[in-house]
Picture: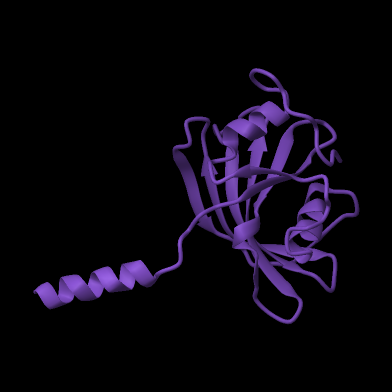
Length: 161
């Protein structure tokens, strides 16, 4: 039994940490959505494909109570497109409302859109645009609401589209 406990402990110790490094990459022109990317989640998944975790924060809750979404996205860095791999919806208390596998269907990225800013950030390895701001490891929900002017002291609007 002790042998299994030691082996399990060694396996956990050797696993990579799941620290986050959230960057606000864009806010919508209408100030209804703030878009964050976890720079530490960016990984190559093919010759021109990059996967990343994103978090979208809404200025008001959707009719179903969704206030934000955590997304696993894959971007094609050789063509303006992306696809959803996983989506988790949260209410304002960060309680999970939905947890779904994405369709995997490729979608076009429009120039100047939130998705375009996210694609640029992910495909550059988290270096462009240079106006992005790090919010560290904490959940970006409150920072997103502040960036959208919801709550006290709104942050500066970065990379507005």
